[in-house]
Image 1 (cartoon, rainbow, N blue to C red):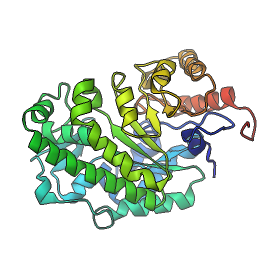
Image 2: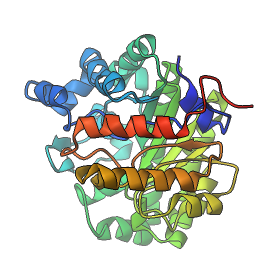
Image 3: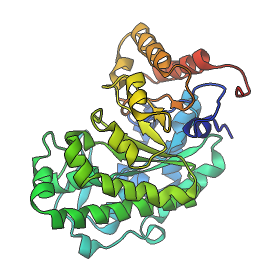
Image 4: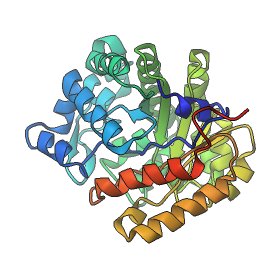
Length: 342
């Protein structure tokens, strides 16, 4: 297996910088759009065969060094009975807020066995590592409280600040769900995991440290014995990087709002970093993509532990050929031969 992604996550020497893309299986691919014409997102997620097919699609086409399981962060909650639907172009939409005491803990073999079957299928078929994932407690809580995506997260912050008992119950439940899901994915064969805290950037450092950090830390601590790379990613989290590091991940994902070298200097040498090209750059001329990419590679300075990625997911308008060209550019400009340097 091509393991340079795993070696980079462990800050080990690699022959070239590994590349993968968040949302690398998605609407920018005509093959995926054809599947979506026949199947809804949750239908795909519940079918191991369809999940495996969609996950595999970009690996060979883009030449990436890792695959990420095609699924949705809401799948475990839907399996538990939460009133959630996925609307095209909107994302998760929640009806009645779930009652953790009624829905109970996630038992992966019982509740999301189809996800684990898909993982097992993929690790037998892929020649690159498979990344499992889950939604972080704060991001999941914000969807459940707001009823869907939000710009201000006012309701979420109000519960967080005014009702600590309800907040702890909800966050504790979501922590169990995420940890159980991630452990099960690893035990089924996933080689690494990523915790998506997409909306954590809505918080200031004090509120994050007091009301969120402990729950993310429980998840990373609960995965430590499995020995796989643990990635922590958020959007707009430039002010939270040190706190996110302190939650215990091995790799910190960076969005495009913070220079990679400045962020890495703040984080220190004890973690790897992932990122961080603006996905919108791929909608412009290739010369701009190349310039921004080479700047990121220069900022990485050849340090061990850089995984090249976008600063968020691939946009639906992206040309697949531009993504392949980007993969090749990173590989060519960072490649030093077949064997890793000593």
